[in-house]
Amino acid sequence: MGALPKKRHTNRRQGNRRAHHKIKIPQLTVCPQCRQVRLSHHACPNCGTYRGRQVFEVKSKRASAE
Image (cartoon, rainbow, N blue to C red):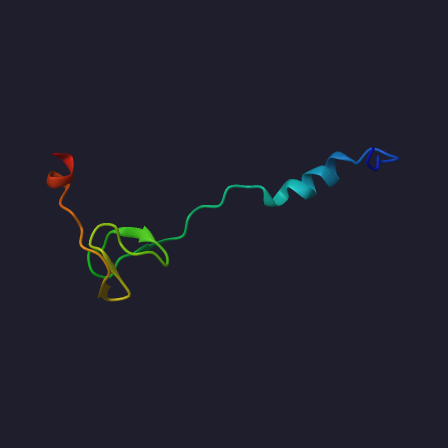
């Protein structure tokens, strides 16, 4: 068997341990080309640019639906 605690940990100690388990809000920025909201340090899914360069071609919504 493994080690067993001699005394019970308090609720405060348990809460302090779990204080970092919260969900973080994603960092959102505005794309300078198309002014749409995008994730920081990611290519814009709307126009396909990152740091002023075209990274990938965006397929039109009509072509992907068909």
